[in-house]
Image 1 (cartoon, rainbow, N blue to C red):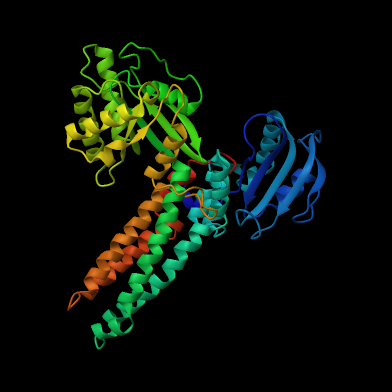
Image 2: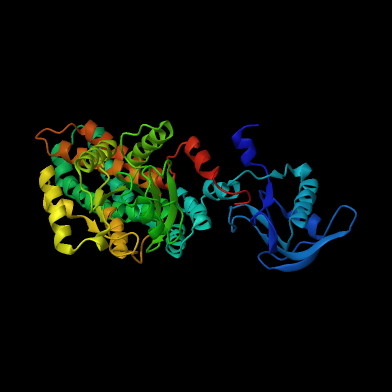
Length: 477
């Protein structure tokens, strides 16, 4: 059956989370559900009014008594007729009601819904754009108050409104340039008289503001991946335990105790932070430890921030070499973004401050580094000295600016789409600055900028993208 034919089917599913609960919801959506509603209820309830009714099986035996809500199209979540049965939340009751609806709706083509299909229909029927549809899943998955509030703002359309505020004037610019191409009697002066370049610069400024907000929202959703790196016995596992507030990693004086990655997710000011402890970086003779060191490099390559730990009591030549290698690998793996590498000087509680200053200065001089860059952060993982300052440094390193009241949840694909739009606008400005600009190329760059922008709201999204997005939803949503 074609996708188009399946979209015409009526669908049904349990809309509440699996397991037992005080209340469970069975939801159905389709082009015309009045007959199905009357069959399951024995009467037609008033639209958009909760009605307490018995819900019976084919023998007339009551399955449960619950609230029935009927939302006629187009004033419903999906834009189609929607029937909701709110009953007691036992799994058996809910499955009996789903089975009864499927039985009653067999002649009407009623079938079980696929993951995300209710929200997909809301998108296809113009009730939500793609960014808002994604925000539905983000609101369900939110694990912090900040994430939930930000997802709610995205669902209300804050990201979409920002996109449309740029898309409309961009569409007008496209029309101006393409009109010049369509009417040869007009020339470049027509475009310049319309202040196209000034308007493009204004759009770039708007885009920069929206991109900064979107990056914040993406960070709030995706979280920050922080890798603890360094030689054996510098305190990486102790720092993981300190940040997590629990004894997650084994801490001993034996080099090579940590042989595989140990990770824990924490929150800093509402931002998810995924901290990964790695095996100590050294030339290991043990085969298992060599595998652990290799995995350490893999983790560093995927990091958003690398914390390179130093033991203030033993800054030897091997430590210098390892530090240089970590920095080179991290920057090469993340070019051009270049994940920051923060130096963390551990065990500060065991050394007087003047001696710590001298040790750090000696380290910087040996590597010919700027002392301010090498100064990093001083702490004691064991006694918790300096932890709060390090937490804030992590957020600053990734560009977080505390939780702005207006931040909306966003995804990496939104950030990439805005970046692509900005790149095309930048090329368009450069083309227009030429003495004899190629208007065909200018028109194409504006078209590509507009298309990148519209990818966010789904106006030009491919079916493959839609399938990937809605396939990640839970059944019944």
